[in-house]
Image (cartoon, rainbow, N blue to C red; front, side, top):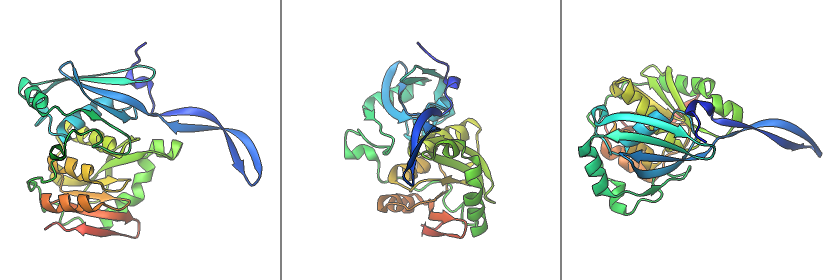
Length: 271
């Protein structure tokens, strides 16, 4: 039986037993929803990702853009999300040019919530050498106060984190650090894809702000940002060595350990 995607809220109520200081009691709790989500392009399933079944249309759009399946919004004609009790499917109709390129790549992706590249058929498909982004240097003037503001204000926008304590967030912030948009998902790469999809849908100028992530900075997050000309990524946790390498090559400013009292700059605006 199919469901409307709006039937899903991102969390499910559970009865749990809390153990503390030698005593036990039953309590109500919420856990993050996680479902396999099939991304279907022109009737052919291309990828199955483990994701939180909310904001699925922008998720699929962001995935298509950040993975280079489509070049831009004109290549996407229609998106429809359909949810069942234990799975979901997002159907995209894309241009014949984009679909032909997709079939040529033959990327079969069995996604996991912890990794955005599981199931890639060969190392060559990882695309480890991005060209320099057009917006390189656009984030040079973003100062420490903006980073501190974003780090301080993000938790107030994380509804599912407050409910469940176990979900990632990707936020779009302006150059002063004001949090303008936030998407949550069990997978950090999924959260970023949702945000990228929304930025594309709203035709946001990526030079006007930066991405703030409630996770570590891994390779696939930086590579996705590079494809969408995003000039800066700030994360609460640490980056990986490959994330730093890709950010430097793409000209993306990369910050880690962004907290209320400071941050670590791993890649400067000049690379």
